[in-house]
Amino acid sequence: MPACSTRFARPGAAEVLFRKTFAALLVIGALTGAHAATPGHEVIPLYDGPGGATCDYFNVGGRVKWHHKRGDWRDINGVVQGPAPFASAIIESIDKSRVIEWDLTALARRWLKTPEANQGVALTAVPGRAGGSVYFHSREADDPQLRPRLVLEYGDNSRQTVAPEADVHLDCSTVQPLGKDKLLLAGRDTITAMRFVLNASAGDDLRRATLQLTTNAKQYGNVKDYPLDRGITKDPDVLMGTGFESALWFSDWSYVSPTLTFGTLASDDALGFKPLDGKALRVKIPHGGNVGLDLGYDFKGKTGSEPEEIYFRYYLRFADDFV
Image (cartoon, rainbow, N blue to C red; front, side, top):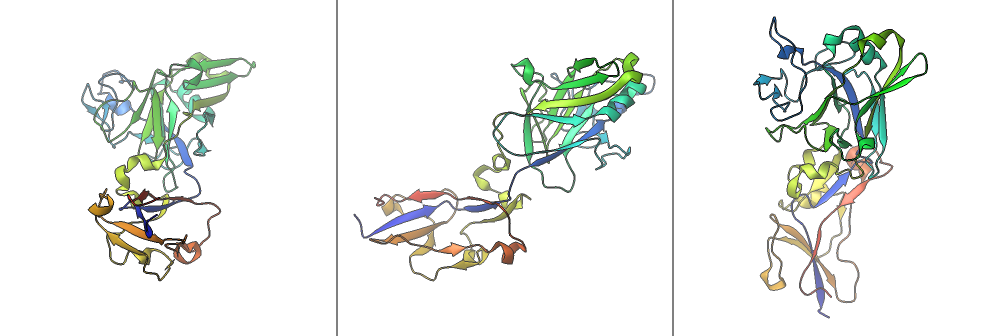
């Protein structure tokens, strides 16, 4: 056994502290695609096929642009891109398939009363609230039971299930239409749009309209948006992220043990260490010992409050002499 062992932590945002949950607060807004029509012409419906809706275009094939990136909607008060939802839900980030419901009775009654106003719904994160993203099964899902549906209940206790005519998520990381994906993504940076066609003759008898979407069993969280963790410290769900590029890296922590068993380095060919991205922190554990570094983060002192639960993630690498 060597006199000491060496550990390497991945550089960059090597230590990242996440908030208690990645719960996504999603809202429903009335999609406004009517601007896609010109005077004297029929309104273009939401389309999710090739040439359909994208981040920039309501209909990319017809070169019809949205007024706002990621879609146009009106909130329950009629405000363009407004923050007041028709309905909302809190969705915890757990790797389990669940059916999420929103009460869209008020919106469905508007559509039945004024069919030309039915351009669809928009799902996005509640403005100003911690978000994240959620994956739902789309109408292209292999299992029909997982597909989106609008459940209509009438005064005579009958029920009707309506499938969307179109569903698509508007992701500004690509210029391609994503309407044929088997998953829909909705959250802080991505909007899901979908449209249902209703029978106007049933309007006066509608008692309740419920939108039901099924989450994917695997939710990927916000880390997927930051390759190699670059830029992750700007995410609102990250309380702290630090690396080792600065000589004062330890100031991000509340305390660091005053020992001589650690330091930063960019590479160490003799021990087989090759950097991933800039500097790393090297910690030596003396032979026969079990502590090489003691550091801590005081939430109360750093953030002003103590969380009930926190997620801590770091990358650990072992040198060739570790046994």
